[in-house]
Image (cartoon, rainbow, N blue to C red):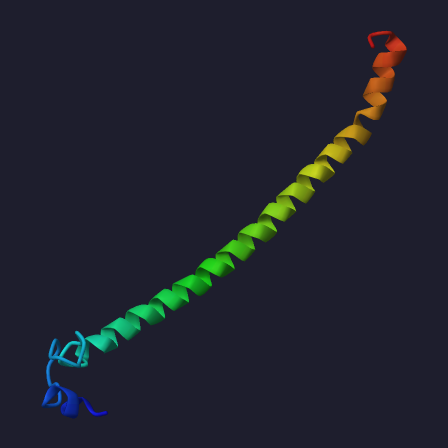
Length: 88
């Protein structure tokens, strides 16, 4: 069923019956589409930033664990010396 049959005449402006609440011109859709494109690009950058942060966090954890392992092996001789001197 055509809108002109139901409402008497075809809607011509925003807010007319049968045309919902659409604006009367399409000029604002171009700016809205540009904004949505920018939002989409920013979302992609946000995901990339999160991935980089994840890699950096994992690298820092590995470095910290390696430093702890090095501390343990580096302290073997000083602890043995302290033990021989009777301090520990």
